[in-house]
Length: 139
Image 1 (cartoon, one colour):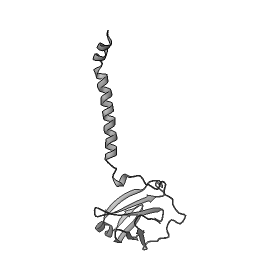
Image 2: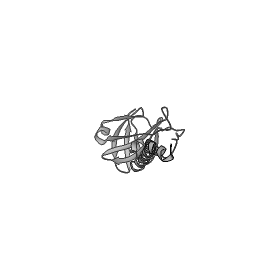
Image 3: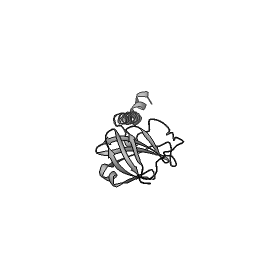
Image 4: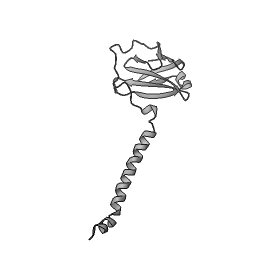
């Protein structure tokens, strides 16, 4: 059997390798052009560091969190991320659950004013702006 005949009969091998290369290139292009939603992004700061004083807030206290700052409140770290699409965006790191992962969430202002729970704590929204959020610690 001649070399040309062998190559003619192996067209499916060429098709397989060409398809594999195109599929791989498509996956790479998709990953590059489609960023992850912000709720699934990795924390840029690496591991969360819990201070020895985990927040001296007691129920009824007002907690003010500037945008981009992290405030310890009894075993959790809360970071205010700002307002996005009419929702107040925050990240919570729960020391007892997973100190290496920040749970991002967004909540509508009217829901937050009625009260919400995050990281095992109950809060009520007092006020918010693009630069800070004020919460009342309920428990």
